Image 1: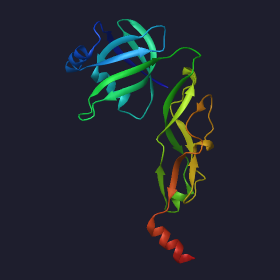
Image 2: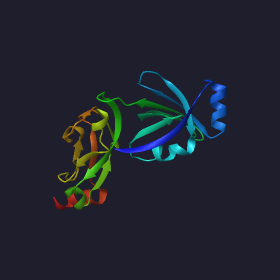
Image 3: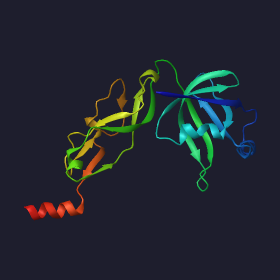
Image 4: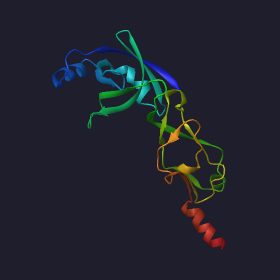
Length: 190
């Protein structure tokens, strides 16, 4: 899994007024929990671009005034109107302790349904998985090489390696839909 460094500074004052002042200075208030103590800190907003605005998942190396901790993003809050990043929660990773995380889906293979004129529709972009930090996957590979027209591949068809999938096993990940023109042609052939 990819790693990314974020440099933060401890916050002395916690509250609405101070958080607002931080945001005006282009800093994001953050909290790190899951370890022995909660650490409230702030980090420059520009550092979150590679972390939050990509489909990929990262393990974050948090450098809070020289104290280095490994963590994952647990939650990020955005302003409802201007989409400004308001707050980020980090969960500290501990050796051997399982964490839950959403991981992107990656399609592998060529679907015969798509070759026949169907359209691949992705229903789930991410799957929720549970694993120890060393077994967290970059992405979950879904094989679509036997996906025919009008068929779908479900979560229970995915073979997890070293992790557990928490998403509903009957939820469809992707479906090959039949376009209207092809439906008409299929009915005419009957």
